[in-house]
Amino acid sequence: MRRTLLAAALTLLFSLPLQAQQPTRIGDDAMARAATLRERALADDTGWKVVESLTTEVGPRLAGSEADARAVEWAKAKFKALGYDKVWTEPVTFPKWERRSESARVLGASAQPLHVTALGGSPAGTVEGDVVRFATLEDLQKAAPGSLAGKIAFVDYRMERARDGSGYGPGGRVRSAGPSAAIKAGAIGYVMRSAGTDSHRNPHTGMTRFEDGLTPIPSAALSLPDADQLARLVALGNTRIALSLDCGWDGEYTSQNVIGEMTGRSKPDEVVVIGGHLDSWDLGTGAIDDGAGVAIGMAAGHLIGQLPKAQRPARTIRVIAFANEEQGLYGGRAYAQKYAADIRKHQLGAESDFGAGRIYAFAAKTPDYAKDAVARIAQALGPLGIEHREDGDGCGPDLSPFNAIGMACAGLSQDGTDYFDLHHTPDDTLDKIDPKALAQNVAAYTVFAFLAADAQGDFGSAPKPADGAK
Image (cartoon, rainbow, N blue to C red):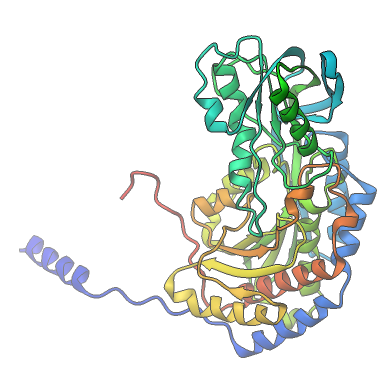
């Protein structure tokens, strides 16, 4: 009898409709405060001062270098100088890759230098060989095993310019997958047209990977004019080059994620996360990649923190300067692992890591019950020339591991039309940043973070089931 009653009760319980999730709301008072913050941010130069300080006082910040350690100390001091309530670091350990020297030259009757840079992860070595040109990565991948024995593979793929940076996907794959394809065909070295859109003799660096079981070969990127030159030489006939790289892995290094918080007024244990990555490549001074992102996050949190405590948003603003994004999202992965159990406490996240061009679109991937709140944020961003889109472009590289396991994500899309003229090159320097465009970014992130942190209700952060789980 008891079992019958229990079964009946359970049947009744599961037949009842689930209580609808209450819509997430953003009040009029918060909207008015956000409008004031927006105008204040547009007139403020904190973002510029921060990126100027980082690129001048620290300069290039290759992960694992002496400058990496100085950048961590800089970030701690800058958070404190900007009035953050809490500042701390969290360790991030990774393999250490070093660049020491690099050169290439054409041999024979047309002898001349080529401007190259080693790809991150390349081994050291000096190789000489005839060049075999491939128009695309796919063409190289079709090369028969052994067909490039004693030769140097050259992939001459031209990356397309796009405001949203969509041309980087195919260009980046030439860098990440090309060396392994060359090894499989028997090549002793690999060069590629840089994944970039400029016309200067500045090669673009970046990480490559070697598939397990393959013996790595010296791998480098040519500046775009040098790639054109090499292609013309190959078209004239047999062309031989020498490639000499002094670089490689040297043990492990422990850097730090540097984190600053402005405490929320009523829900301090819940956070909105913004920020950028602190490391950079070593060719320029890391202004657009990603000094600007660090500066935007720091300045936005600073402006919100200047509010009287009673006017701060309900939740805490957490700004993260991530360690070693460039070589494999190490800081982002470490953060996701450490805070996996606290996903529900992460209200919403967005990262700036696409330069300092003006933001032109905003999108957030959230449940239907949060759509009205997202629309309110978009409304407050509208006066900055930012349109609301349904299709987002993610929440940034370092937050992607956390988003993958359940953190709600928003994207503020920057104009990247010229970004890949500078990306990973010696031209990534402070003078390439427009202070007014940077201020627009700071204003957008200030509005976004404030309203997301003050919303009544959430944006859907919750653990995702493991693959295969029901």
